[in-house]
Amino acid sequence: MPKMLVPLAEGFEEIEAITIIDVCRRGNIDVTVAGVTGMTIKGGQGIEVAADCLIDSVDINSYDMITLPGGLAGTMVLSESKNVQSILKQMKEQGKYIGAICAAPLALHTADVLNEEFTCYPSIENQIRLDGYHQEQSTVIDDKVMTSQGVGTAIDFALKIVWQLQGESSFKALKENILA
Amino acid sequence: MPKMLVPLAEGFEEIEAITIIDVCRRGNIDVTVAGVTGMTIKGGQGIEVAADCLIDSVDINSYDMITLPGGLAGTMVLSESKNVQSILKQMKEQGKYIGAICAAPLALHTADVLNEEFTCYPSIENQIRLDGYHQEQSTVIDDKVMTSQGVGTAIDFALKIVWQLQGESSFKALKENILA
Image 1 (cartoon, one colour):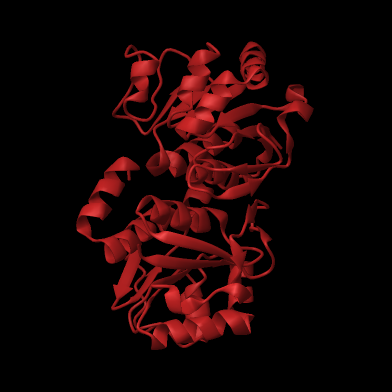
Image 2: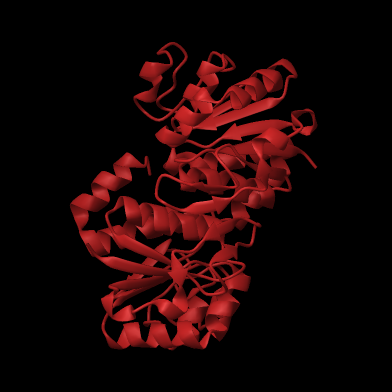
């Protein structure tokens, strides 16, 4: 079963995080929710979610993918966390999958792990770069780096992670099952 | 500010619950997350969410709406909870708004508060009734009772709650903001 790490930092966007975790678990991906700011993390809309472990205790060698939910406040923490930034660089070096949605592609940019083609929440590209930015695509896949725009594209993003890690038939069955 | 109650019971569907809470809070609805099975509630995909209070401590007279997330296990608890069933009947008698998504329209049916026209997760209608069931509509609004189909229709459902309680312009601005 492929393993995915989802780091949560105070101020994360709840729909994006929960959609990624829930849809990928339904797609038989072993998802670990890792707390960056504690074992209980409050999202941007005030919803508190429990982590499975602290990010410090994670052995990243066993993971196939890391995916960052958005939320501007949460993204700032992910961009400033030495641990998260170091994990992103290691995952990139090891040729693992990397994903980010909404504001979070900025945290990939900070770690210098974003590939050429990407998308993000409109206006965040101004803090990344205009070259390679795709406003017209919900989710952009450039080799092993996947990016998406925001709350309204979270299901599409999560389903495409399942497609990447589990293949076409898992993707199609799950898409139908969740009425997406 | 309109007030909405969202009861969470063990086994609730996480994307549906979080989407309703998050989108409605963004739409300036005062949402209370009420734990039915404790102050920390685990969803169907293993994600633990903290409640704002226990359902027993809620004064329902101050609420404008109650909305139930789906998830079959959670719905069974909501259907069997005397307290939740009593709250649903009182909200109906007081002419308040009532919403349910996925399997949860079954809990409305059990409380006898469902109106004639409704939708739900495909196949759940067999446990409710075929008359008035709309498979082709993501979200059905019949007077003050709103129902929706599941994970893939949760954003549509939540936005339509904002439309009902806050009006067209709030709905439109929020829809654009979340890229839905």
